[in-house]
Length: 396
Image (cartoon, rainbow, N blue to C red):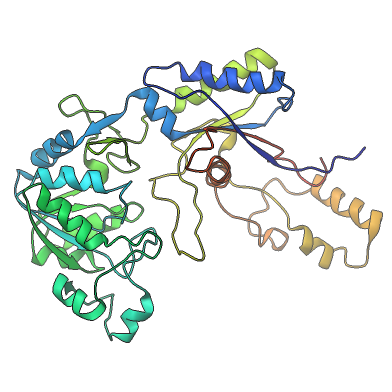
């Protein structure tokens, strides 16, 4: 009988993971146990995804507010710091801000408007237009912002992030000044010491700050890149990708995951003879069209993956073939013509017409997004994702 089902993504339940656990064995046992229970049959080029959260937890990759503060003092000498372009998040940034403020005398907090980098809005863009304000050039003080727009409230949570972030700074004994601007250069009029907290635009921001005359420039990716007073650390991304663990601690993004993913691939190969691909995944790379939030607050979707997940899809657009090359065919004749085309397609379609409209994104970003959507961020308890059929096509 002809196979009907294509790609299948399953969330696999796992034990609660603790620091020091043998995660390679746990992941392997969960997958082999699911196969033994008849949930699926392991096959070549199946994909295993493991959320970065449990990898970092096993690594014990945590830091507390005092340790963040110590590194801020190391970098900026305990003086005033311009903190620019943070995302609006209690989970992602609030604890980091507490540590930054604890390590400085004054914080000049510069927020982008009408939204942060990942789409959390301080206000509706239409209100900016109505007020006659140019967000590309106008720099607003806190008083000017409130005069034009009133108190800001996040559309989903109702949080007033301006007041919330200001209160965190002041609770830590630092002076707080809030401004609103979208040009990195704006902060240099207030201070030459700058910590840029943007994620995906951080390299450009550092360049523009240097061009504008900033003197001490660090990114959030350069804080806790090594252990400070016994803290965890992330050599490549620093505090980027961190999450709140407790009111005084954060969990950092995991360190090198390459050995980890290849060990799981080896374990499955030894047990079944099949070669699966393995990746560690964080946030998916997708945008909510209603809330306008772009999910990717991690620096990358996947911090580690096996070689078979490199590259981008090489797919043809079935509807293009049906509407153009084989417009005069139907039924079994059409099916066979398209199947034959797929079997003989070029190994690298590039920007050919037949490939236009397929997704020109990296496999790790696409599959990592699928993993993130499958596991969710709540209480499903499925930090391991098992995907089958992703590399199939119409002929398989």
